[in-house]
Length: 180
Image (cartoon, rainbow, N blue to C red):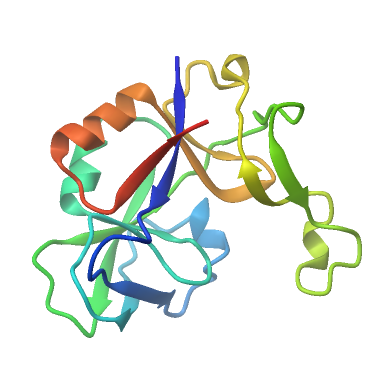
């Protein structure tokens, strides 16, 4: 099975940009949220709303109702209502969290940087991935999973071919898929 990194299309024309989720630990929201809570997120720069957006600083996934419905039946995803402040929207929006984290990177084939000990910005992340120039996953370590985060690089979301096809069939806007 092939896998793809799900990313926010930063080149989407006249797109909106979303800010931090208010009154929440934005770092934590990548993998854990309260599905009973309604979160608030402000529009930093107005533009066309997208079915898939990551907020500016933390990479929190904000998805439309259409995106959420395209993933119905897919395990290991949590959603909570997100109220968009400062814009009347055409859709309902949700924060999407992925509790499943897999150690799946093929480091021999990938090109990446890791946080170093005593990093001035994120010293608690020493040894974790800082960023990828080229990400390659080991499909054997992903077998049986349709959507997950990369262990040690929590902002990287990886999806299976089936999830990619579901989202493309639904016609979601703002999502990009890069083969990994």
